[in-house]
Image 1 (tube, helix red, strand yellow):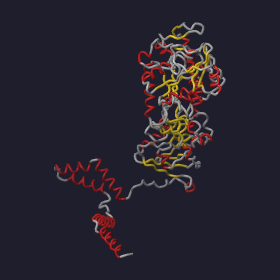
Image 2 (tube, rainbow, N blue to C red):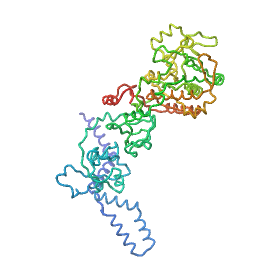
Image 3 (cartoon, one colour):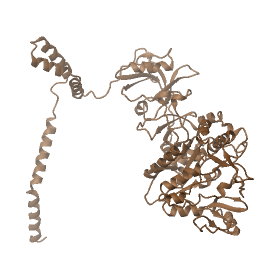
Image 4 (cartoon, rainbow, N blue to C red):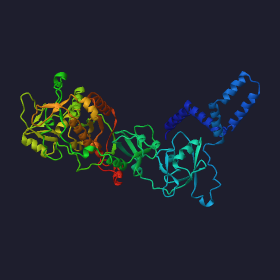
Length: 587
């Protein structure tokens, strides 16, 4: 190294050592080291008793204003709590001490009996108890995930409770235990005979999310083991299932609630049994006549709004009474499904999906019995925001009239081309009317989605399953009728086509029409409820429309959307669930 290089290094080192910030850091370091050596110790370890003694002496002295003020200050609860914390820190008393072993515990039982002491807080214990039918002992029935008992790791399912806070449970009933726990102020002490430890389930299975497909209120369920430990939920809520060991009661957390503690929910098997005992009456009696097809008011929506609504003119959807599908699955005559029993909808496994602004809009599928108002809801949505919503243009083999435009009113095809598209499975659904084909193609759906719009689709219930794919990710809305009393009020002036022979003949709804609509709605819900994302009761069309539009706006704004797990392939949670035999097409 040359002399010039050494001189430059010297200058650099000198400038660093002379830096003012470096000297300040050295001083801070020295102060910290000297403070560490001193290790400040508390002057008094029993400040609480000292304050009490001082207060007593002051009260015996002259009762001046200064003395009164000082005594009042020392007597305040906050000041007493501060002194109590001071004493706890000074004495190193940070953990609760376990009480000594009871004298009545025999030496040979010392290995099988343990004393568990838990500090009592506002947090629930998170455990339920029951009486063992074979031994008569009171045992821990369930430990709720996330509760105090679960976090402690000291109490387990199957443990036998001998005492609570020193009170023997030999002649006690399980319902008396909450009262014993309520008497304790600071801690709860259990004398327990441990059960054999269980093998913990795989952590992968714990991350299982399901969408509830029914409403549940534990206050209305007389069979729930403990109402306070149960979780209430609504249809559509997302639940994280954390324990499925019990055949009748699972443990889950509701993501809608801020409470992270797990609670009881009916298991899939339990809810299926309940539904089986309450089968809709439409499954046991044949429908008398086909439901009516509603006739819209004679209003020119294009003239009013300037919007031409393709796909809402008279089409094969208005000819359902004469339509005959070429394939059994696409038949317009909706089977009651008596010969094809479908398990009742309970829970559907879902996974979170991050919504990207560049993603295509989700397909919105509306379904419901004829006459319930599905077409009217679709029409109102389209008129309310034509830049956001769109409908498909149907295909037909009939001749184009003078006032019709290709690609606007219909896509006109030859019979040969239409049948070729049928063979290539390019139609979502199709049928015949007056000797001509009519249908809704997959290409027409893609055209609407390609424009960045939400495609509103009204399909036969039997066709929903074919649309439930990762390609379309449909949001399925079931529109159901209200009770028959409300139908009589809201549909008393509505008209419908009343016969196949005379298309110009219309009449108002009858009692049989109302009953048929309700029966068909029950059948559709019984067979397809596992695919519904939203259920809307259309008693008042204006109210139903506002509810539907608000729900679709909420869906648009959500960054995280929950989709069926099968749309994203087999996740580890889904694979683990299926290996346990708990997952079919839905759960």
